Length: 77
Image (cartoon, rainbow, N blue to C red):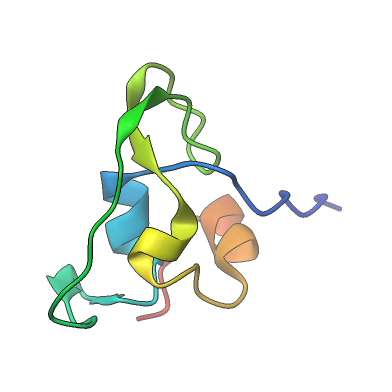
């Protein structure tokens, strides 16, 4: 049995587009005016190091069961 991943502090853009609530099939569907602060760190989803990341809230937070779907390699949307 897999342990659930903790909710990440930092998310890279590819993971944010896949698992964020403000993206649907790679298209942005969130509010028209937002901003975020990016920096280099480790993505809390894919664990890639030294990539540009921001907080999950900047992607509308993460979809329900994002961590379980990440483990099995699916995106239900």
